[in-house]
Length: 334
Image (cartoon, rainbow, N blue to C red):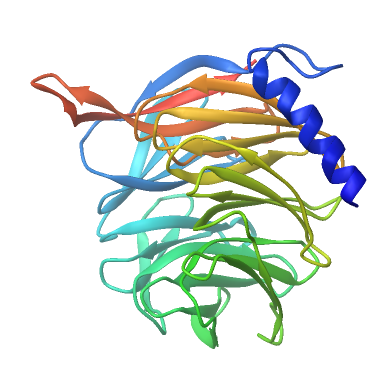
């Protein structure tokens, strides 16, 4: 493993020295190909792409904007979601769910009409990330203000359990086999738990990666991609927690994404950069380069069908270049 790690770092050094050069056997670097005007002002957090409906869901202050990607128009919004962070979908039930950090609730909405159906109080404070786990068919919220996780049955819309995480959760990802991984931002660890029993399996340290935020997964090869606020991306073996390598990234990372079709890994950063890596093999990640997006564009959504990445951002205000103007989306592709 030491020899493998040395090979990874050696190759990384070559491509970091020439960040504009694509990896061997790869095509040109993805680039900004479009933008979509959404309108309105205010902050944002997670974005989610629905491949089947060609819709982009954007958390936006106290509402969720829903954009039709085919028309590049806002189809509607889900209002009254104070301090909204994330969105999760259960298409077979025709339901969507938002995590509202402002009042500790989950908003349930109809995917067709976008109307609010119900509000669920979580068993914690400041729900941040939210996800649908496909094996147990549960919705999970990760409550940053109370260090716990709430499990919800989307069929009954009832809370069915709470898991104490003993740390402040950030983003989470499911492996498709009943396990859930979540970053513990204040512990510099990634935690793994069983979605059915709500039993914790493992807590793995991420050093030298610190203050982990973004998290994504190559489910086929069992690799986690963790974005740390100390400007490091860590590659983690999802079976035993081994750190397979770390790589420099931009400032203020908040999301990572893995595209199984292109084998590309993305890290989106608040400093207005998007770092791109190529997974050459399960144990070899190679930097592809860095593209400039927009200051504040720290989250993203991936469409695995078109291999496009959507990054929420705001134009600079006309009267103050350092203030936020109108909300829009940056589209990155090839």
